[in-house]
Image 1 (cartoon, one colour):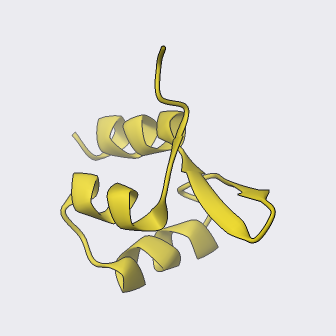
Image 2 (cartoon, rainbow, N blue to C red):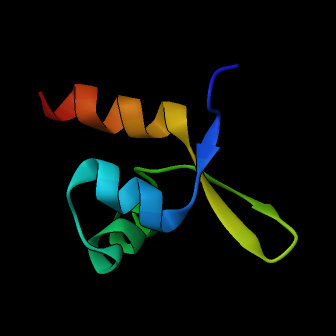
Length: 55
C-alpha cells in the first residue's frame, strides 16, 4: 500500500528542513494538509510536487 500522508516530523525529516520551515511552506500553500481529529498530516503527493518544482 502506498503512503498517502505523513506527520509533520516525518515530512520535515524527509525534506531535510526544520519544523518551522515546514509550517512556513504549509502557510504559503506549497504543502497540502489534512486534519484527522487533532492531527495535522501532510499529503505525500504535495511533498513530491514541492521537490519536483524545486529541481
